[in-house]
Figure 1: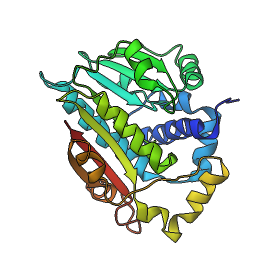
Figure 2 (figure 1 turned 90 degrees about the vertical axis):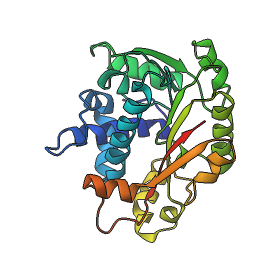
Figure 3 (figure 1 turned 120 degrees about the horizontal axis):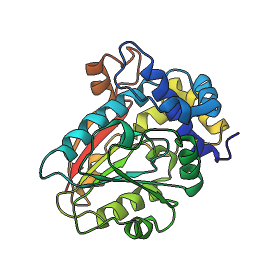
Figure 4 (figure 1 turned 45 degrees about the horizontal axis):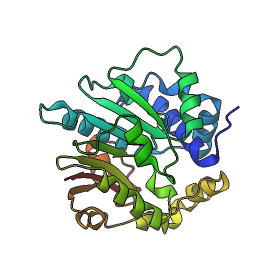
Length: 263
């Protein structure tokens, strides 16, 4: 039985959806550890939620970007996954010259370590950083070896929709303060229009009933980054999903936004 709170349990839901994607003949990626990380809790949540193409789309989109950003000779050698959850990129992607920091609540990281006890070693140096994002996580990250004076690549995936707007703004303020020139920031947002879409209400209500309601969405993410000194590119889930052959014909016109920002 999982002892995680409802929002943290969404990490197991995401793992279940990645495991489901990995079983498809036309899969966008393969995550061989996702099923064990999902467990019964994740599978039950995935069954309740139903189809969620955005998870597979954003996973593949960020896989490609992370590999490209960190793969060059001049790319950042520090990769930080905030609210890392049950992410397995340290195991399934090649980051040979990179130190990958996974920041999340201590109890979630302890569960993850237990579930991965028999897994192969990561393909890079992986550092687990137990910290609540509502607390002084930059200090915990620095104590774990992160160097704010060097460029970093940040990934914030599957998080902002669970936060209130002031917490979203504070999160990006803190990331910016820790980001040297040459840093990259990858993240995604639920569309504000999706939160108001009657067709999305059953899924939103189901998440709220599970104790993990969505609070934040935006139809214009660019100012969040330009106002903080980042150069930003944004693309809609619908556009990326259509290119991948995964966006439903009756899906929201945007669904949300995938963002790549550079300092």
